[in-house]
Image (cartoon, rainbow, N blue to C red; front, side, top):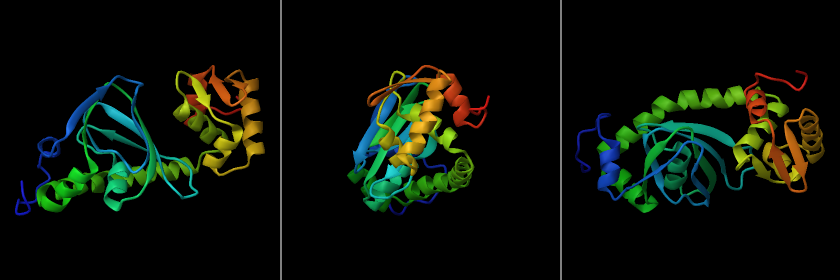
Length: 220
């Protein structure tokens, strides 16, 4: 494909990315696909499975946001950070066995600028996904702090353990450390977590998952 290609949403994004030098990678369900801080290391296009991505733009005092990418979709926050030359903190976990293609940022920029067909196909997928993405963000804003803390713990856990202080959590969620400490004490009293200095062990991930989705409350 070249700049004179006829724009079409039928353009094979995967084929174009592979032809540009993309590298195929894969991971099993529950594994971390990638975790980056700073300028993204690669453009990511999913060819099998699904990724759950949590991200935050560096230097902005906002909480973590979440998006998901499935077959034929890229990781939109990473793509935006590459094209805008912004730094980002991002981590992605496989919601199921997943395969994806990684392309270097420089190669992506060249592909976007030189190939009209690829550019239109890529941004057409973004246009379809953005309404759902913003709807999910709006829904999350209606959740209580308990919901958000539960979600934060699950997102940051590795083998059911979170390495973070109450201050770290409060900073990410834009609230006071004392408020987070009080909520975590309630979680511990419920038997959902065990707290140690600088660490939190999750004993009841299913309960936290239900709480994070608004299906459970501390009063239950």
